[in-house]
Structures are given as structure tokens and as C-alpha cells.
Amino acid sequence: MTDRPENKETDSRITLEGIEGKMEASTWRKIHRLLDKHPERFTAVLRNWMNEKRR
Image 1: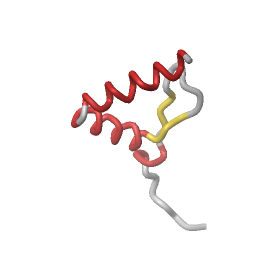
Image 2 (image 1 turned 90 degrees about the vertical axis):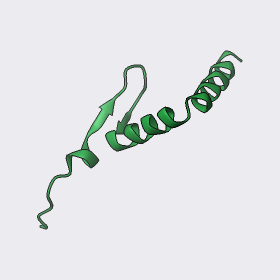
Image 3 (image 1 turned 30 degrees about the vertical axis):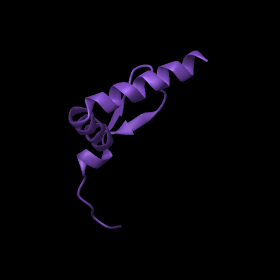
Image 4 (image 1 turned 180 degrees about the vertical axis):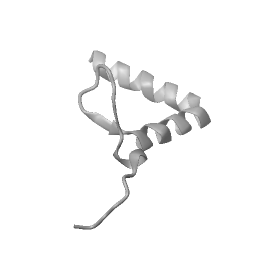
């Protein structure tokens, strides 16, 4: 058995209310960074997604 230090950042998971499944915390942080840099793109994507859900 290989001793491997625990990497809490990699192994941690975030449960998002209303979303099935889990997401790695590092992925969630990357999404937040992109949203901070490009809020207008996020808004456009979110609006398109919401319009698709209505159809």
C-alpha cells in the first residue's frame, strides 16, 4: 500500500441544493473565477439555458 497524503482540495465535494450529484470544489472555484472575469457571458448562457428549459 502506498502512503499518499490526503489532498483535501481534490477530494472535497460540494453538494449543491437542487442539483443532483456532486462537484469537485476545485471545479466550483474555476467556475467562480470565470464568472468574475466574464459576467456578461454568464448572463447570456444562463438566459439561453432558461429559455431552453421553457420549451
